[in-house]
Image (cartoon, rainbow, N blue to C red; front, top):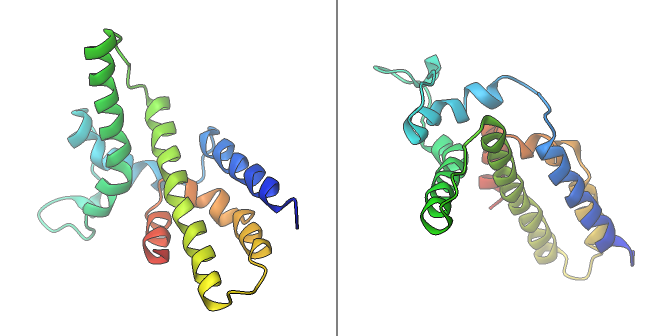
Length: 161
């Protein structure tokens, strides 16, 4: 177990690499999260799917603004800051937007790691917690699905907290 921190670091690096890979899991990753808020945040022509259309939307847009809109707002702020301080124009390309939203979701997925660790420590203070945390960190669901902009990934972090 003395190498468990190194294994955890390797698994976190794998999570980061899997997040920025141009992988395609399901269209909902794009059409039910970033595209819904891109029109409002970035001022681009974006399609709002039927779940969010007026006059009677069936889903709330608030959680999507939290996990898909926040990275866009941060990139837009970075763009303005770089332009003002360094005179450098940061182009908001689709690739940068994709990577920013996925890296944000990696940070959100770390909430699950921390919450599981703290819960186990409270339930059984003398137990070996590292194997459980390593098992969690190596799971497909946490390593891949929770690092993409899915509503379920955000809900898992909210429920864990």
